[in-house]
Image (cartoon, rainbow, N blue to C red):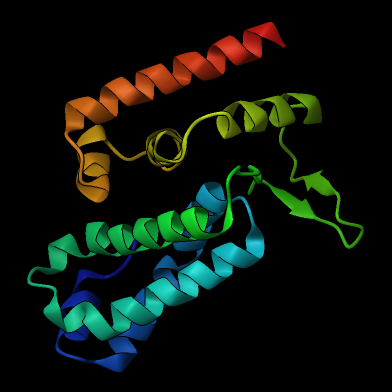
Length: 178
């Protein structure tokens, strides 16, 4: 995520304009992350909105501006976990690199991977449990280090690495069978 550290410092002091600048900078990243975790565009928008509201109210309690990114991602992942727990037994993976037409079909945004391959990867990802999907999404899709993911998900970094390896192996096995 890219945002201005000075805006975070000002937002901690209740500067609303600074928080608005942060929101503009991070909104799309939060939305993509929620979309990967929830698989539903409307739920992702709702979770991001709730996350931003909680962050706006609670930012004055943030002790260090450097911890802002991990703090806001922690809020987001906790809200996603609650949504999944409350509303879903199974998760339908949505590909944020595609756009939905009015007819409800997904259309690729110019990637060279064929639709069948994308669908297979989405299905393989959906076979993982919620925490493993979050780990794969944060590490592989968003590019966070295992130590950062560990902090966000309140886990040990070696546990994150082993779960990531196991999850990728499960996905690979699924894809090889198909």
